[in-house]
Image 1 (cartoon, rainbow, N blue to C red):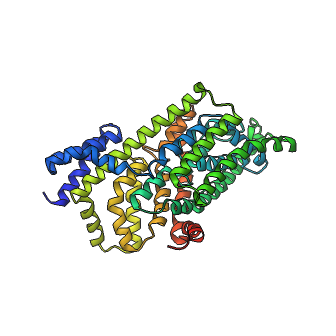
Image 2 (tube, rainbow, N blue to C red):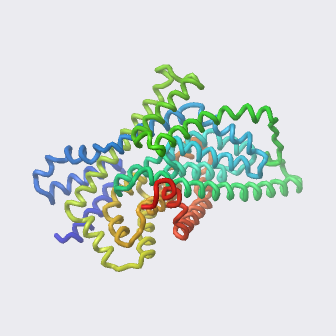
Length: 449
């Protein structure tokens, strides 16, 4: 069987097994094991455990469950709601200020949790009811939180970036720094749209009221005294301390990424114990249980994805696919467009973790050959995968929103996130025209490559 035919069969079987509804980890493991049985030496089956262990015995991957623990510590406590309340108190006077507050709260929470679903759940559980209570349309409120949650895989510490650094053999510290500029860009774009949309909905509500209709909550004026605002500041301070402590430890050279993850988890637990009194076993049980379940699920997907990639490499499928792409002699930017379109299509069905580990052996060699900076591409790919978190049919964040706001129709949620998808496309174009948005900060701090 030719390598082309074998590769096509490998891909087709993978899609069939995944569409059967089987969990992704088991689907990838079964396909990889099946092809080992039929197309590789019989002795290779005896090495499955060893291969998975060797691929996962990475000190970088150790940081994943520790970052998950840090995110769970904040997400499963009142900390997320306090962060949101404090930002809202200071920004409520700005047109669309409540929407901006939610975007900023998502960004800050994402920078500490590193998880998009956790960000959606923690901020959305407080933010969506508050926005709807103040007149925001259900779709708009859902869209802000769903889109803001995607920042969890772009702003450091990002679990997705950790996996990309492993797959692409790039510096994790440089990759983390490269995500800050694009993360701020998306925050600005999202906040700008929140102002535009809120003003539009305000004027619509005002027009209806002036014509004798019902007075919308949009038209109600909300006041906070300076004393109330100042009293809210201590709610944000612990988050800032936690964020600065982790960043200083990582970029100051005091700790490796894995040690930084451990430090972040300990600081988060200490914050909960000191400020919220969460230290008893019954209080910690939901946090630890959630961390164990999410870590187990994610690491199982990683292990099976790595086995899947190993089989693909052994059978020369990935090498042949990469060589075929190079042989097309596509121009540099056409090659990038084709690869990103492929990532978008994969995003319809797969989470970012699987996309990275399954596609890296195929797409990275041609990109390297074309002269692309793989750190820069990692950021662009991350933004494109963020789009996968909020577009149907899988759109994980969409279903998180449906879970915390079940009365909002799915159609409204999808239309609510659509403008944010367009803003992400704008961000990708800006990164292509101005790559220093991503590469400038790491080059300035760590030196040019």
